[in-house]
Image 1 (cartoon, rainbow, N blue to C red):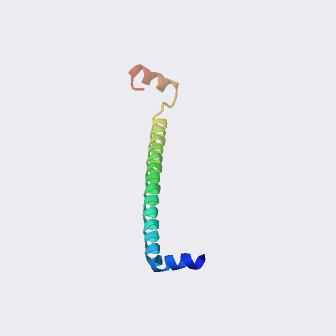
Image 2 (tube, helix red, strand yellow):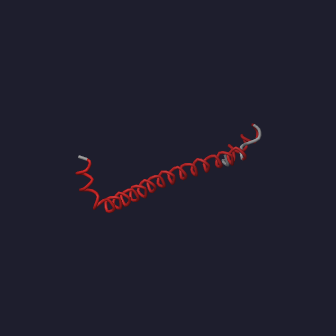
Image 3 (cartoon, helix red, strand yellow):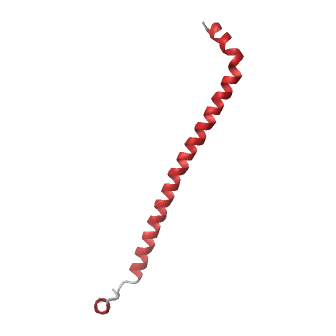
Length: 79
């Protein structure tokens, strides 16, 4: 049985190996592109998160120091 299958595949073994190599390379490129897309989304999400954190820190730095300053800001409309 093995001799029969081997005699059929032996002349085409190099061609089959080449096609399998090409299919493997295409699969690797497609999976790499998919992973790159995921990484790009992850980076964009992290960038937005960092931007929100910076805005929160800036708002905390501009907060009124005491109640009188809060009241004056509310009356002036600058709060």
